[in-house]
Image 1 (tube, helix red, strand yellow):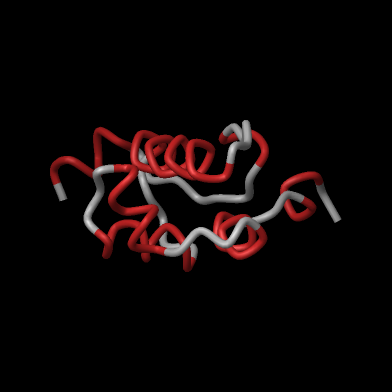
Image 2 (image 1 turned 90 degrees about the vertical axis):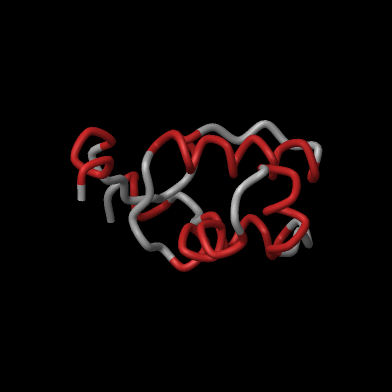
Length: 82
């Protein structure tokens, strides 16, 4: 198993800290469907994931970074035009 597989997914962190999707959406100022996509592992931009993770940190009193979680990212330039 490599280092990426050992990192928790965003959904596991939300469950562990009892942060629900609506609170996370409000705190991150993101649409709940974008947050849901991030929670189930749909690729997101690093910026979107960063905003959601910052909101989780604020709600849970934690200090996770993008390097601490397992996530897949889309290229931000390509994502803009598709």
